Length: 485
Ligand code: MYA
Image 1 (cartoon, rainbow, N blue to C red):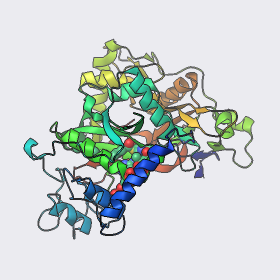
Image 2 (image 1 turned 60 degrees about the vertical axis):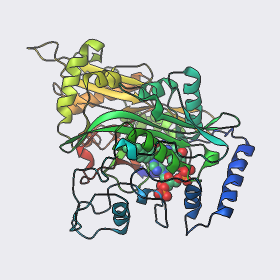
Image 3 (image 1 turned 135 degrees about the vertical axis):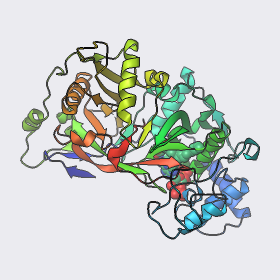
Image 4 (image 1 turned 180 degrees about the vertical axis):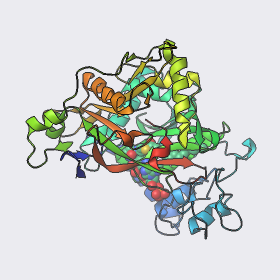
């Protein structure tokens, strides 16, 4: 769970945080779902292990839109039926059983010789008339609900679900606490579709019990530019866990996205599923070491005193990059050009339009901080440097003194007039001046060049990157150029 960094400081993986917030689901709702499922199981003969879902899925008449016909006796009853990269995709050789299962149901990820075809959909696009038109069934007592994220009340409902039930670390000490303004930002980029903010409510109480989202993005994987969606905020209320609701949410969002002519997606998760395209590790840089030790995020190494630790992590009060200042709308064309050009060197990145860039990068208080510098003598309006981080606090459980861990997450950074090390040191100062406790960064893009020198400590888990329905070789984390929220 913890690891000693080079500085002798142990860090926890901020995969996220966790928590123990009380659940407000009434027992009667949970019980009614359980009873409903038990009744179904009594009437449907399940083939084999993991059959709870299969029985449920069959009873509900569920059918995968692309990929497998249903869940069976596999390690990943759901994921092994989905059009995903397969283990050993990068090598020639025999097809694996699960790959065969996909092919039998329409997949095309391998050629006849058993060699993997690269850089193509695993399952071909389907014409509209072949797509399932009606939503997947929900268990009795629950119903689909498209959430209006622009409505403050509904946004607060999403906030409430996530803040109590979303991603936690292994021992449930820290849990992500995405703020309502952050959710609005994350879910309304140019071209977003309301239908892709998908909730599940209790029919009786109307309470939001589960959620999943998709937003559009043009993503380049190696040489191919693909219209896809970014999937995020998959969440099932703690009282409804392990009942195979997540696969239904994933199938329904897939169906809705497919109906708009899109068949690929990108997403990240802390869990290893079939099969990541890349794997990145979080590193953490202490900004407020005393608090981090107090809350158990970090620990004092043997022979390290708090006074020495504070000194070790002390940062300059001011930034050093000349002319570094908050980005404004007038900077968008120049900063967009800088980032788009920089991202060319990576194997997986978003191809931002100028409009996308303005949405994702302009500063928003308490959500995203972006600074730029224009240090080109010949062209004083040219943006030469860009540094940004988003604000994602975590709820801290069971701590008498602290309820929130304030965390900055490195976003997109480009340095041309100063070394990347200097620019990122400025990022730490900016985060410290916004009262952040810790600055987190993944081992993607060129981050590994500065992490150790800037006294980041290694986290203890990995963030997996996935491409849905897209075959391509695995890549190293330094080749990943996309940061998902
Ligand atoms: S990552 C954040 C995920 N959220 C959390 O970790 C929040 C806390 N946890 C929960 O709310 C629940 O535990 C969740 C699972 C909802 C995660 N990604 O219903 P179940 C598989 C994908 O009985 P529950 C993010 O948001 C699991 O392996 N699948 O389980 C990106 C098993 O399948 P299989 C996951 O615990 C999401 C099945 O679910 C994940 O009650 C990208 C069990 O279902 C996970 N993080 O609920 C989603 N965790 O048996 C994919 C578990 O096969 C998008 N599972 O192993 C795919 C693209 C879709 C669009 C395509 C368009 C073309």
